[in-house]
Image (cartoon, rainbow, N blue to C red; front, side):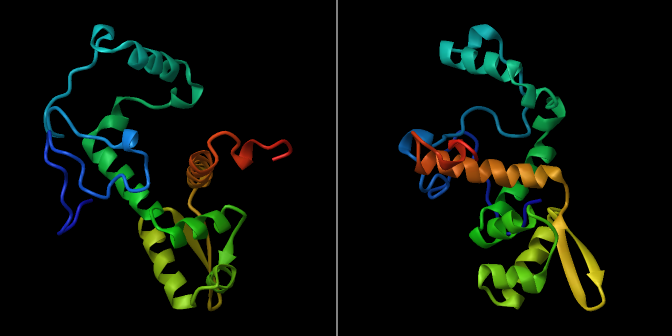
Length: 179
């Protein structure tokens, strides 16, 4: 799902400038090793450092990762996942999805909630619909939007919670009692 003008980082080269904007320097990533067309060999425990082995052990024990499998690392699958993340990488679209997590809304209600013009909101919703993140229902001349599935709601919640961890590293608001 790449289009004209989309460039991938060259194998072994750095991530394009701005890709890690707003992240600490330690979060910058440099791509190393074979490109996406090469056959990957599984890592052996001897290939991992102590911290990597601890992370691998934690991943194996994480019940949330139990449903992930080798197909999730297929290059085509990863490309689709990147496109989903690109759709989320817009404040208006992320806010729209957050509002839709509370339930179905009309375009007019969403525009009012975001204090944005209806045509601008409609364009963002069209992008989200194209990415299969939202679904529609027409009632007379009104189009109602809802999240496509429960995974979209979870993804939005996790992204917003992670943002709280970045902004409030020692006391993120979603960890407050009663929340």
